Image (cartoon, rainbow, N blue to C red; front, side):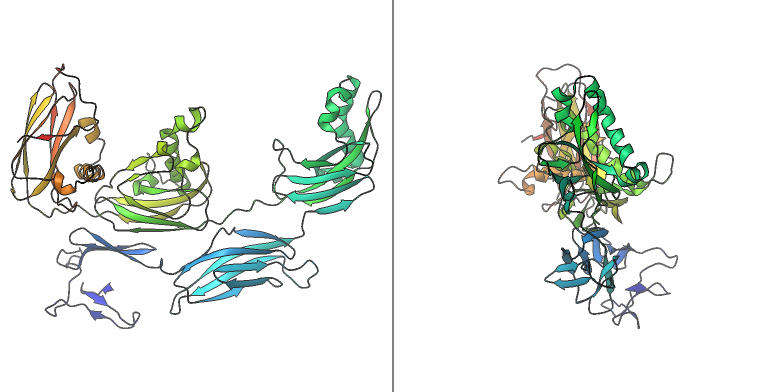
Length: 570
């Protein structure tokens, strides 16, 4: 669809080669814009906007039709890193999630093998003795929808020799069983079971620069002090040295550096009269710590069913790791001095709000009652705003307020490790339409205060209109940005808290009504308000409100309910 030079809607049914105007039932072309370029109310839509993922058609009644551009066509590799490390001959598999894909083509570096079957991508690194292979490169899945659309999903790959294995030396056998980005794990067995020996990881560059003698002298200097002081055999020998077969793992307090070359060294030591004596040569087994494998998380985010007070949205992650998601105002990306904020700064502020809200439960309770994983999400999420968000941990439940009409918003999703940002921020911008009344009605609210009691008369101008009349504390009422945001919130909770067997129709009023509220808080501001509403939960009129102040003193104890109810006078 498009708008031609004269401002009329037109459509193409052959991919844009030819266009024809859209006509109404009378065969007349349909105007999209007025002569001055503004949208008009007698068109199909009051506004048409778009972003990278969707086109948004706003109808004249304020409702929005969202049409996806590309969300029906995608392919993602689940739990795949930016670069996947392999050892020679190793095979790894990755699940594929896709939609609208009719055909795929696989590309790979020389010497690698790839296959795609039953939504699983299999990648096999070349063997160590293979000829003419590429040690690193990119595996790509090029995919097509069978028509004009195509795209690509990529996975970086790199192969290196295994860092594990058994090494035989003159004095020791060392079996390295695991190497990570921060540690090495090995089993060390001396040829002479009676000796004591020292084992540790040492920077290969530093060892080669200093030499074996300097390294052993440096390491045993502290031991020599304990020997000279007479403390060695009573305590420190068993802390620093080992005998027999020993399972070594890098201490968590002294992690190794990722992507660096090391030697796992071992040498025998014997206690002398005033110093230690090295009894074996130094055995050193080279290894290299891995680089951290960062999962290349992708979030497919969509927004739909946009109304003047809410929206629905979906977040589909490419893995099962934790992430935050939610809707923020677009203005959140602008700082207090008008400076633009980065996505990471907005994400950090979003998480900080949760930290402030649940600080005691996260840090001060003993034991703590919630964890960061209780506040973040994992897996596919489908949410509707406004809503009451029921989490697995009831202490972290929360109510999500309605949106504000005619406001720019942004759906965000970003991966976290605890509270620390782990991924880029996925965003989807949208705008709420204006509230458009569908009924003409005004309300006359006559409120009389008698100590802590209210007498209320409601007179609607339209006697056939169904409506809601409630009251609330002024402090709560003015936490909302607009009357209509409050009205949407009030309607949500009215429906949410319906007693068993009751419907919204049971809450609606018609015609002139007299009501009362008793035993309110003394010297407290209250707001009495009314707005039109249908039985199926559609607000039809603007909200009308009256603010009153109860008198000092109290004949009876105040009501403890946070939101007192009005009682109809019959």
